[in-house]
Figure 1 (cartoon, rainbow, N blue to C red):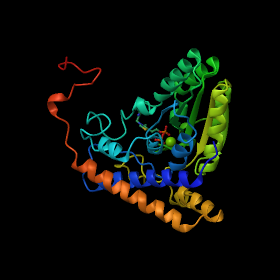
Figure 2: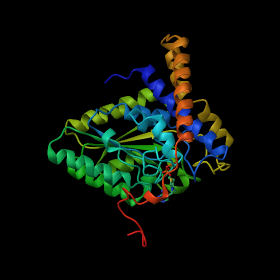
Figure 3: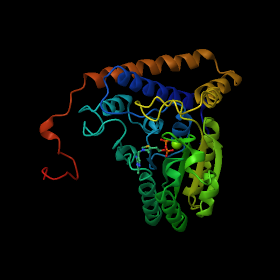
Figure 4: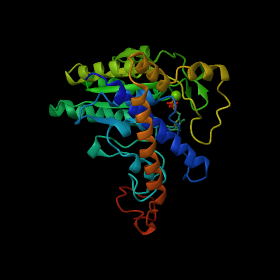
Length: 322
Ligand SMILES: Cc1ncc(C[n+]2csc(CCOP(=O)(O)OP(=O)(O)O)c2C)c(N)n1
Ligand SMILES: [Mg+2]
């Protein structure tokens, strides 16, 4: 599938706008608990999710709002989920992005314990292969996630089984406040992946065209029986790990360097070079603004969950809730 740059721009702009709206809600005391920031990661989640076919599945992580949107989760539902309302994805049983998934859209709920989504996605991919279904699983983890045992085990199993899975590692240089140089003895994630028997490529995660090209090649290969691929996407998280984090630990010079490579600005420059009329870009911005204002109003006006139904549709509960 050829990447339509204006389509990619709209999803990335929508991702940024939803993320900004969430931030504003939290900064004005209207959020529940914490929430993660997405800024800087838009080209990865959008560019990768746009490579999937209707029957494929995605297991996103906490910086992949764009993947949820591309797969068809509406901004209304996403925002209501974030605010813990009864109209949200988990009907208010969880907030922010934890537990957020909808199998009818091919979205496996985010498993918070990192990188727990990897074995889930590998398992889904193995099931596709063993049933002879031409389907692919896409999943994401971070540079921090890539140094856990579960990452290694997942890659090993995926390689052994030639599972049709694509694992995108969002290398945003930090795992919370720990820079990659301090958490990885070997910071070459692609080399570590190859050592486990999985093909791997390094790409610029702020360039949606590069993300789309690499992930589409990996998805096609997986569908054709070629097995798993790791795509290591270099990027930078441009805000704190989560809303409470002022991220003073990131040097200003590093942020300034990455600021010049903002994924939306890079794409806008690409569109301008292709002589796409500015009017069309601004029309997308306006339309996205309307969609997000509507979603915020919907979420804010939505009811809280009924406490009497707190255990309904919950698979496992703690003592006293049987
Ligand atoms: C097993 C486990 N330990 C700790 C956490 C808390 N936690 C959530 S995100 C995160 C940082 C992960 O870093 P990385 O994998 O680089 O992803 P990033 O947040 O940078 O996108 C941590 C420590 C968790 N979810 N799971
Ligand atoms: Mg990281």
